[in-house]
Image (tube, rainbow, N blue to C red; front, side, top):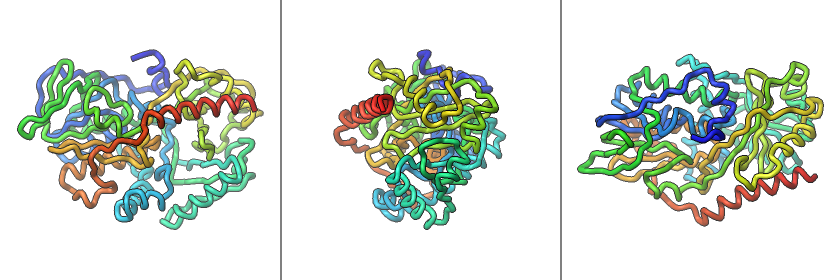
Length: 426
């Protein structure tokens, strides 16, 4: 693990301890889960609470990957609007998926309450900010579809938006009171602890190096141990390595980076998100703004902050603060980090069936907290035969390659870097 991988605000400010428990023996379990992020730990909790013998393997520490580097917004739904979701996966699946993810923030915050997870949970709504008239039109289009399905999103004008954000140059927003903010790594750790308390076996520092099936039993080799299971759920998302290379072509890896300051003064906080909402905007290369319980300013955008060709990150962030929150004044960037995202071909998650009781969930496309929590539970219920395949919120399918995947990956990263250069110049 490199220093930059360990340098997220969430990891450096966590109160829970990193737990390493290496599998160093041969073990038999009913269900094995590979990956200790939101999806894997949520599924493990569901299995364990149902009395299933479940064992989770995590290569590093719980929440090491994208889950622990997340922005931390418990948003409802996906990036795609509900009508588009139904067109992509078909109306029956789409209706179930839209309904499930509309309620997913409630699931997250209820789990936090039920298991007393200390993760700075604040459910006061998120704001989707319009940076242009075109952006405002897209928000109105989204609001119409979401509210037609029973939600109560509020369209705010420029003055109402400024009152909550103190952000210049935004002409309106959608307030979604279903959502909130959390410390994502602590939430993920809390799910792991809840699963463990319910009876799940959790092994960290234990990478799955090989997986194969013999006579209906799955064998998962690790450096020092061997895990045998009747069924397996792979929940590594963009951090898949060593095993099942056919899954890597089913998503496009991209990065989201964030920078954070030390805690702001009270005067600065009066002029930076006074409503304490988590926010993101309608730009193609979006920006996110939020604060945490300590009052740090946190800004994020698409792209990898650590590659050699990533210029101007700090000066770009300085300019964004200067232009958007001018009264806050100059700030120092104490924390810088990036996390990998698995983008599916259509920005809707994938349920993969690979045969003989082997399943995978990936392709959250940057919407990991609420969908990961909810879909992990749904897959667990299916694998326990509590629901049938046709009752799932997503169709089970064989792995399908994303067309022109390498070009798509390069487009994401190059486009994000060029946009930052343009923003810096203007």
